[in-house]
Length: 114
Image (cartoon, rainbow, N blue to C red; front, side, top):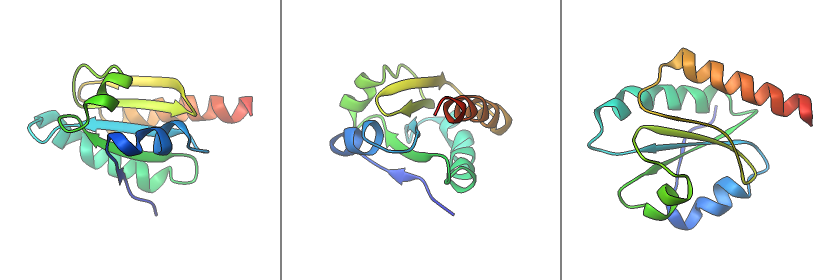
């Protein structure tokens, strides 16, 4: 069982762009109500997709470089990367089933293409 890895701007390229596995980056803020609703789903993803995916989370306020790199305009925000390529993104509150559907679709496509 894997857990969400908290990172900051200095670790972004290494943890996200240089990862062997696809990476789900979760952008959040302490003042964001919808982020509190999405966080349990992100923890669930880390626990249930650890064989296929790495999950990182970044608080947006202290990490403006990563926010700019990923064009995050609102939180919560999800960005799915394979190496440096953005595969999928979502901004705003999202339910567990929607996250699961998004991940299954894109991860299955990546596995078929490899």
